[in-house]
Image (cartoon, rainbow over all chains, first blue to last red; front, side, top):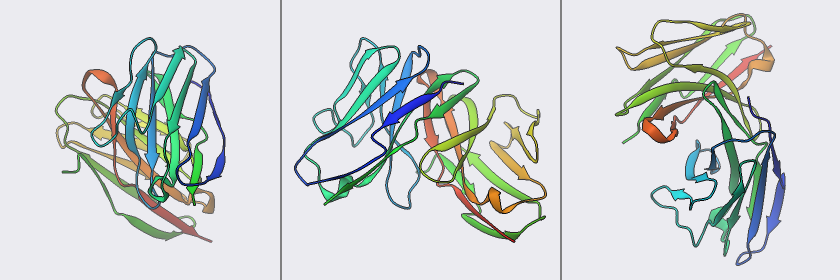
Length: 112
Length: 111
């Protein structure tokens, strides 16, 4: 299975600012996924990122708020823009192969 | 409506007990079902199930898929306190590896 390094591990940010989360995969993968897990909730898919094309966003998530980059087959970033306290969550990236999908270590974001 | 439903939502057992966690799903183009264990932030991959009736096993954990019943179970035998976690079920639908997660089962194993 793919091994994914994600950073930062946690951050406390002021409202109105932006944070970029990075994920590095130890092998080339076609698709990467970004999830949000709000306190006490399960995982919600934000978007799917393919290399060389625009990310596909799920209902309720927009590119202006969560821009995603996928410059190559091993790396992706998610930016949380113009943050508000409601954006306080754990953000996770995921990828893998047909035999299983793994997650990055997660980013715990607190917006104050 | 929820595409993936897990039960029970929470469970408290004592060490040595056996537990069975349930996951039912309703998706249009089922491809696979995955089980994860989440202790802190990142879910840890446990199993991927694609074929009905074939049990996957790893140590004290095992899982099986029933496509006819649109469900899966995760069994943990001889539970230990280290098994305390949230267990997540996810279903892969269709052509784009789109995963739907259940709300999870919170397992608490007491000494």
